[in-house]
Each structure stands twice: as C-alpha cells, then as structure tokens.
Length: 85
Image (cartoon, rainbow, N blue to C red):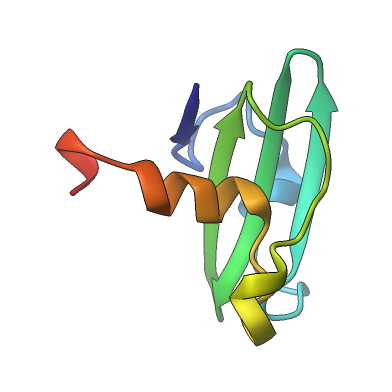
C-alpha cells in the first residue's frame, strides 16, 4: 500500500505537518514496521505526506535531480491511478 495522508489527521506527528523551518526539498522519515511515513517539502509552506508498507528505508531517488524526492514519492507518482489522476 502506498498513498497520501491528509496532514490534519491526529495520528500524523506535528513535526511532519509543518513546513516552516524546513528547507525546500527536504524529507523526514518515520519507520514503524510495517509502515513508513514520509513528509516532503516541495514548495514553501507546502507539505506532502505519504504512507507506505512497501518501502522500508530512506532512499532518495537519484533520478529526481535537485528536487531530491524520496523513492516513495516517485513510486507513488509513477503508479497512481483512479482517484488521484
């Protein structure tokens, strides 16, 4: 399972919801087997949060260049269908 999580959910840690103070293109990872939670800052004051049961490490995709996107996000963008498209 790989999908986005709304940042207003109480289960999401506070430091994952806030973009202030985080540099652009930075990522935060939290591992709680079998799930991985990723917070990514693509723009100022914007946070993208994803949860995955397929990814168990903090790999940054080398093909994403200067945007330094985590592998979880590039996988999600490559395979999203249905509601998210």
